[in-house]
Length: 218
Image (cartoon, rainbow, N blue to C red):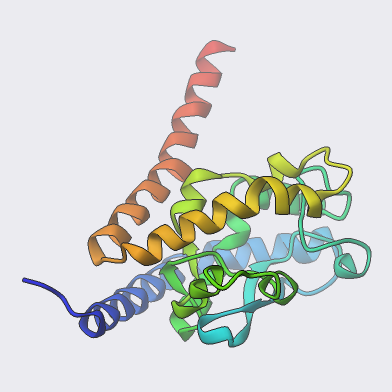
C-alpha cells in the first residue's frame, strides 16, 4: 500500500504530537531541576530562544536550555565550539549530554518543528542557500536527522578553531546539507522511525556503554 504525501504528513504530525507530549510530561520534574540549576549557576533566563528559519521560510524561536552567558550573541558568532568561553559551568555538561536540546520538544508540540527533519539554520545562513539547498525549507525542521547521526558533537569539531564560522561552513555545512537533501528525497514514516531509533541508540545507549567500558578499564 502506497502512502500519499498528504497522508504521510498527517501521520508524521500525529506522531510528533504524541511523542512530544509524552516526553514533556515525563521529563517535567527533571526539567524543573535543570531549570533551577541554570538559574543558580548563572543569573538570567532558563531558556535560550534562538531565531531559526522553519518550513516555507517562516522564522520561529527555537527553545533550548540556556548554556551560555546572557550576552553571548553580542560577544561571539552563531557557532559554538566545545571550548567556547561563553559556555557556563552547568552549560558545559548540558551540551556534552545534549540535554540542552530537549526543550525543542516544545517546538515540536507547537508545530514549529518535527521530531525528525533537517536541523534548522539561523537566518544569515539560510541566505547562503543554493537553489537546491532551498528545498530544505519545504519540510519542517527537526530535532534529529541523518546529519545528526553523522556528527554527534558539532562542538568538538569546532573546538580549537581560530574561526569557528569558517570551519563550520567548510567542514560541516556541505555534508550536513547533502544529508538533509537525501532525507527529503527519501522521506517515509519508516525512515523517521529508523532515525529516531538510531538517535536514541547513539546518544544514550552507546554513551552509557562507553562510560561503563571506561570505568572497567580505569
